[in-house]
Amino acid sequence: MLFDRVPPHDDDAEMAVLGGMLMSKDAIGEVSQMIDISDFYQPKHQTIYQAIITLFAASQPVDAVLIANALLKDGDLEKVGGTDYLHSLVASVPTAANATYYADIVHQRAVLRNVIAAGTKIAQMGYSAEGSQAEDIVNLAQAEVYEMSVGKVRQDYEAIGPVVQDTLEQLDKMQNGEVEKGVPTGFQVIDDVTQGLQPGQMIVVAGRPAMGKSTLGVDFARSAALHNNMATVIFSLEMSKNELAQRIIAAETDIPLVALRRADDITSDRWKVLNDFWSKLQNAPLFIDDSPNMSLMEIRAKCRRLKQTNDLKLVVIDYLQLMSSGKQVESRQQEVSEFSRALKLLAKELEVPVVALSQLNRGPEARNDKKPMLSDLRESGSIEQDADAVFLVNRPDFYDKEDRPGEADIILAKHRNGPTDTFNLLFIGEKSKFVNMPQDQQGGV
Image (cartoon, rainbow, N blue to C red; front, top):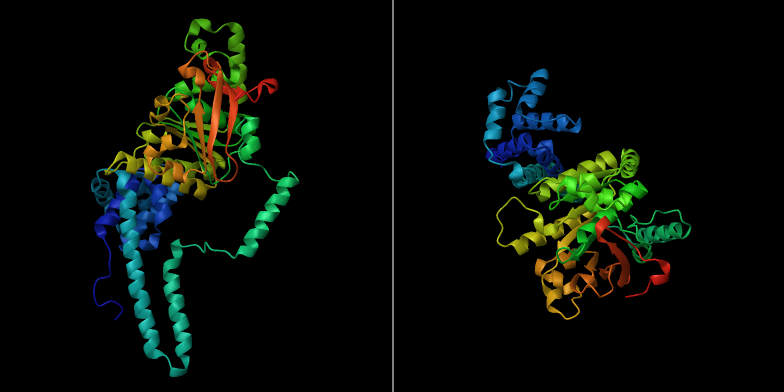
């Protein structure tokens, strides 16, 4: 007898996972990373899950009606309980935001079933083996237990020899100019020190409100997508798509922002410039998402999709403190810390740099020189700890119009893979961009 009791499973969690997937394509993206079809205990749930994944993989929309049609076509609709059962799955969950929570429960129950099955199999091998086979049985038993945990666990460790060899080969290729450096920021002085924005890194751009951190984030995105043809997504939690587009147009065409907001200022010459820019932009791989109350789950799911469809190379999030997790948390600080950790993991998983913009606390305003410091980030928990690089944006003329007007200091206050530094750029507010300092003026920090 394999099981003398009902194996561990949770029907409610299985229903909630499927209900969440039928409500949100982002939930499908997240859940499919966490569980396999075999994690479901109920055969009808396996059938429904397979139908959802099949439609989703074909880039088709997914909802209860479309899944019912797909199941009907395959002759499976009645087996799973008909259309009514599919609608009851959607009704069983108030929101798709908790789909990953339920998926975890489903996966854990499946692991427990595997434990029981492996234990039973090992016991049977022990009873039926000859004495001389004892050592073989131990090896088989170990293999059985390891097999259980595989599925979701990759062999992450590697001997130092091959790793060093890879590193030296990488260095050799860089010297010979065969390897792309990181994503270019568009600023020579910054790229010289950082070698561009590196895949797998979380880069924080921080500043007080109105200091220009959004502008710098958009500058990085423009450099990658419009000037180097690297697919980039900007999640704009503060500005609308149109506001962001106006800033990008101003920065790229040198038509002042104020003119783009007043139709009377657009002369026929400017229209020509705008139309030329638009035709040049047609196939630019820059994506903008201004969905309100963006949750971490949505951002991850959208990034994964862009990685698959467009070979995503850069993610910019404006800004960290405006993200929502969709669940109750003890403190806002703890929530922001969770985001920061998750974005670092996202950067590693997708092997792209993730640029997260962040607010600084009021520390700089209390100091005489108003200069921001790394400690001004600390209020936000682990941002400083998780970041591979932190850029602090400082414009002295923001506080005193006579203090180096038009200049900006971009302070590289943390750099995990190299030296820290301060870069002197020009800030052109009316065209919403930073630009390289002319050669003869550099070093005015």
